Length: 521
Image 1 (cartoon, helix red, strand yellow):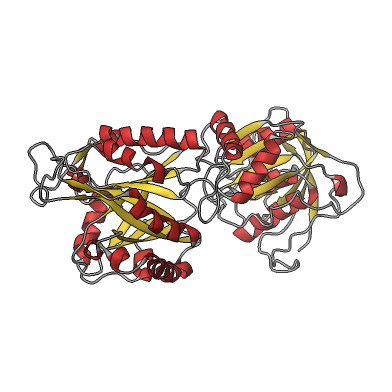
Image 2 (cartoon, one colour; image 1 turned 90 degrees about the vertical axis):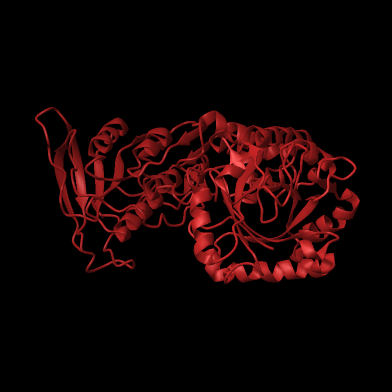
């Protein structure tokens, strides 16, 4: 594909082309890039220091360039009419030559033009289009040499795009002496231009599955090292919160020694939990207790393995262990709930945790408060791989009877448990802990809009417990999810005897949105 070199007067409103899809791969972003193709002088200079900075989702690449580059005499622009392949090729050129890359669109043209002027760009490599920038107004602009490539990709180049660094463009922008600038965290939705520009600026790009530096073991290590060193930590994409949020979570990464099964220190996204539900001493209360702990571990592992082919995150075997059981009779306490001895529960926790799994202890409170019962098992919850489940179905009022009414709880009572759990996690320096609430009727959680949606230390999930014909289960799933904050994780339960029919692992994994937790009862 022939390359052409032309000089144009670039001013605000230039580069107005059609929209470009931004789902293309950002290429290998795990290192600081490679050398340029020539021996010329360095003509693009990264910012001297960024500190700890969140860069919100940036399809055009302008916001990323503003933070990470001080100057650049040359830049790559992917034409708005370009294909995903051209976007990938343009990002590759930027990474290779150490220069910023921008994706043009009707809405981004003004920002792109302004950023070229701020950087002092005198040359542009235009990828994926033959249309050239034009002077959109009579106001004074900047002379920019534009090197263009064809857009149909019909010849040349291993990628089939016909895109290569133009011989006419100045090569060797930065060379082998490119200095490492810092660490950039990138979520899966981070725009390719942002990732490529960060790499071009010398940042080590570390992929994370959640918008949190504690997301993976790799991101924890990179974040802690950077904060203890130069301190240039940037996050690319939405969900990271403010700069202060990023710094706080980065510092937490270094303050916690433990890791969750599957890696990292935050629950979701980043893993899928497959749990057997039951009681340590009563097989009639669930499949977990139908066999000894070691055999139950094997059963949970085999079940989790069936979800492996359907998941792009680690699948973690788990036990959900009922530790207090709602009772028909008030009992000595008058609270219609019977406690399990923590020491009888502990071998089950140890068995699943030693096998690389996660344990969840489940409380059915009767007429006691959720917090009263949770505090009874504080020692078990001090383990980094033990979470807590609350069962409002069995939360009874002063005149209610179990098995007669479906119980309910106000969101304020759940929030009390979350606050207490938060304090426990902080004092014990634990990774984020799961707080799961069972629900199959909206009335079970009153004032749910006021319920905590999660904190740095507590991951909140709502677990949908409906059973019966699949049409009924699907309807319950939709009702329970109605108005639920997207920050809250989701759980699904398969009832082995009551569902008609019970979903296979493949069918369960296909439920939309995909459940983070699947339990079997």
